[in-house]
Amino acid sequence: MNLPVLLRTARTRIRLPESSDAVKLQRFRVDNRAHLAPWEPLREDSYYTLEHCAQAIADGQEAARLDRGYPFVVFDPAEENILASFTLANVVRGPFQACLLGYGTAASQQGRGLMHEALEAGLSWAFGELGLHRVMANYLPRNERSARLLERLGFEREGHARDYLRIAGRWEDHVLTAKIRVDD
Ligand SMILES: CC(C)(COP(=O)(O)OP(=O)(O)OC[C@H]1O[C@@H](n2cnc3c(N)ncnc32)[C@H](O)[C@@H]1OP(=O)(O)O)[C@@H](O)C(=O)NCCC(=O)NCCS
Image (cartoon, rainbow, N blue to C red; front, side):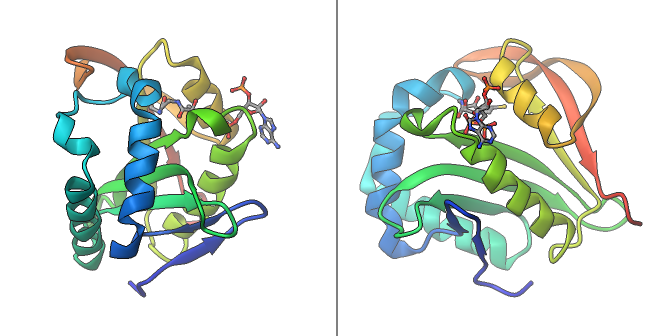
């Protein structure tokens, strides 16, 4: 894998964060704490500290170097603010060639088509340069925005998993979806 990766879209620049982005990542986490909390695992207070953000960035760089996961951040074109983030996690090679996708848009940026724009670029990279065959994304049945987003991106529903992930402190059922590369 050729690192670093920079993806450009009409309204964004998308890349793995570097150590110099720690303050921006912290601002994104703090500003969106209440917005993202219902859809994520419980976070310790330490998750919102600069130290934790710096460590997460270092861990993300290492995960990418090892081809295990790619935690992208979505910047505005001037790279002043993080507008959203998405992660291609749990990359598995061999006969599977798959990963799990997770994502979130800043509360202030929702409803503008930004995540769709960013994920179109991210998926094209995942199926192209990264060479994956399958990207899986799973959502809480009540997360209608996420369901609409995945459908527009061409994800297909594959099933319903009971007590699939522990979200906001509770085991929650999830709808399982996937998008498959069509040309192989
Ligand atoms: C789910 C989530 C990522 C969607 O983010 P988003 O940036 O608003 O998503 P989109 O890019 O799909 O934006 C689409 C919305 O903008 C509207 N829109 C406005 N301009 C648009 C444009 N140019 N292109 C596409 N959609 C546009 C769409 O109609 C759509 O509205 P809808 O959500 O009522 O269907 C966001 O709500 C979020 O972060 N939620 C909390 C975290 C979360 O749920 N994560 C996923 C866990 S599975």
